Length: 273
Image (tube, rainbow, N blue to C red):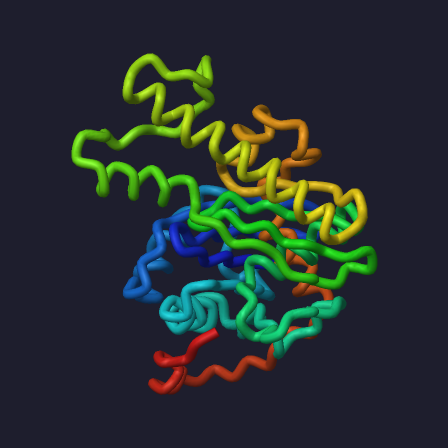
């Protein structure tokens, strides 16, 4: 079985695939100083509840945009699952497509994983919108090449910034308001966030399509993808597992790294993506 680990800025998602389907998905808040043993106590308990044993995990694919979390996640896999994780990096794995960027090493692993899975399941050309800590728009060409994209502030970051910077504005939850014109402070803020981001989505997709010169499909992922898909016809598909699918496909394209049962050198604590 494959253990997929997607370490984002907000959450780390763990999932197990048995070759046919995902057997479980679990998430924990990202904390770079969380030790491998802390991860293990939490994860092994959840695996047990799902009827899975650590010995059944024979491979691991790991993607992270938080370099400081890599050391302890790698230790977790080595110490508790006896295998070496395949780390999704722009320059050290076979992606199966070109990365047409000025500095390919700087592209976040999540963006490349999204591009890989989206092209595999929906075929290009397309745009992948990921509603995460940042809201990203990634463009995939006809043959699957990663062309580039757009990075905008995430929705929850925007809500928090609005609350912190304006003394009289409360912290609000995100939802689709009943009307665009808010008749109180909270509905007005909810309208600005929701319809403001719908405008951002529609405007950027329109400009990307015009610049690219073809009618790109639009795939959305992330926890807020279904909510915003209801507010616009621009989004054609929502896919909550697209990053995990990218890790599964990447593992299928690359041989498993050689595992030696040795202690990870202390120098790896400073390793970055």
